[in-house]
Image (cartoon, rainbow, N blue to C red; front, side, top):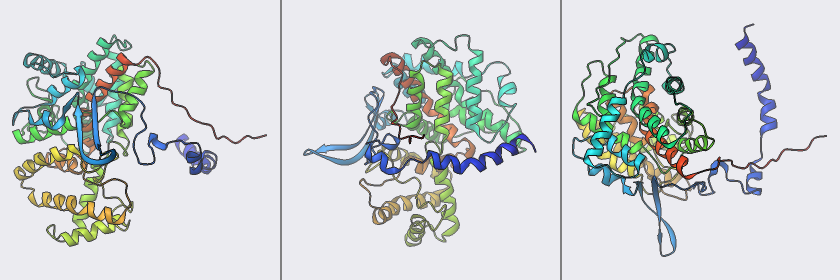
Length: 444
């Protein structure tokens, strides 16, 4: 018997032993006042730190009462919609907003040009890295491929262990520049060696923006339209940062607080984001939308769509989980500001791609689903579509393969992780060490 089979059989035999000994009664959490998942009974995150980087607003004080309001997302004191609307119609904003998050202030025109030029020059990998690292072990799991590459890049850095602010900032800027290459080349290797497609590796163009390079490197003909580049650029900006209270950003701060290096910290954040409860929401939306299309006859028939959504909510259709994916958010109540901003760009892209019928289906679900959820669920806050409701649709229209969806998220979110790493290095001097209460039974 081979070793893997032997270990598999042993683990299966011992699963019930683990379950019986590791099961903690739910009543004990209430008895000891422990907030599971660091959330209170209303789903709000337990306060674990302070930050100057971003802010989420989902409630406001009205006459002494906490009332739900349209969501707001702020980066360094600026509303995200103001930052995005302040860009030109074709102007890329990723590099400008990345500077804002990292440095804490908007760049002057000269600083913006210098930073964009630096990002372009850093968008390269060590000699033979693509061949010797990325292509040696191609995998469908692009997040694993990227994480392996991040840790390997530390071997090429003579100052990998230096955790000074200036060195960490230098490492973060380089990783922000390199992430698109790690993602696209990782996919290209998998697509060739595992799926039999043609292999092509396009070198990035330092004169192009992050979004433009992503599309150019991913496509065999290197071609893209201004609308495609603008929509992807907007998606990246909206996914850069989200209040600091999400799982992967908290992971970033926890690992940073231990004194670990930048590469290990970002690898840990990647491992967090990879989890389907965090970074895979838009994939579930796309799977659900395919299922809906297979079971309805007319995308213009609201009653038919509502009836099938009702079956999904009852756990009678799709994955039997009783969830309409892309609806609701752990923090926002009346609306997700990222979805409100993004929707206009989604509509432009749908028009360019002649996907108006698909857009109509999304719009109908956006209208009908919150009403159905309100009728069938007793919730303490409202339900509205979140940014993931549309992001998968956008990636599909851009021809981005589903294997890259979470990787695209990481290309954006590493900016936020980097900002939080720098802030943690500057402001905190203690390792983050949460407490767990033991409810272990005594044995004689």
